[in-house]
Image (cartoon, helix red, strand yellow):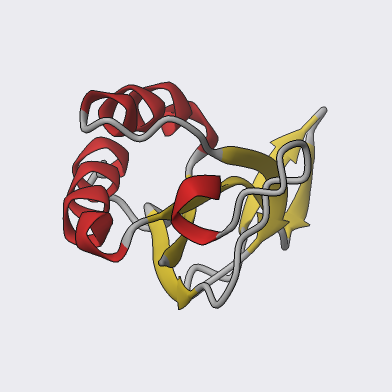
Length: 112
């Protein structure tokens, strides 16, 4: 089992959600986050004053899935989140050692 964690641009969330649903993924968690990578933020102009924005708004998706679905999921997220511009995001893949569905007590594969 794997946990896919993806950081994407907020306006791409609907596209990514649709792409993930199209390949049969039934659940995901979305969190609004702020951060920066190589771009180190940017400057903006507000009421005539220029200021530095260090942390850019992003969306973090977390999806627990079977190991055999990882490559299809990465492709779906990558294609849907792609703009070709700096800040498109990153995808991280983690091993899941155990999953428990609280309501039923189901474990691991049945809990996903």
